Image (cartoon, rainbow, N blue to C red; front, side, top):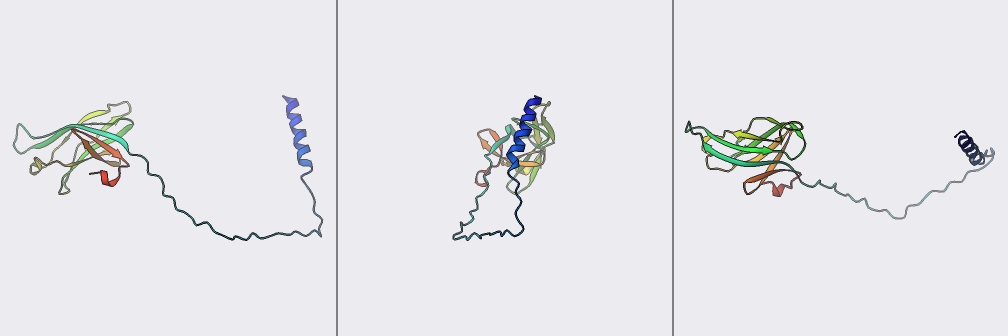
Length: 163
């Protein structure tokens, strides 16, 4: 190993020995300027939008008036995350007049469960109406798109497909 290091050191000295040159004091240096004859217009390329990703699923949502009281309207369902871990998972229902109702906050994923039931308690006047649902995962809110009785909360969903 010691021989290779010595050989490498000798080769480095031989290669760089001729690279250092002293210029005489009376030497003149000539520089030329480059003339640009045409310019290429700068093109602005938009950044690529990431593909939509499934963030959470809603299923089994049933809304009804409570069996003990005629003035308690509630909606029950199930929220599930396909991957990851979230400390704060919340389901939000927004009705056409922009009133929103939120479920309790649960923690999903990691070493805990990936699916839990949720409960919403909208006002009785919303009985029979279908709200727009959203799922909040930590600090980000994702819109839910329905396919039959199962909804999928998407990230990076184009605006025209959100509702």
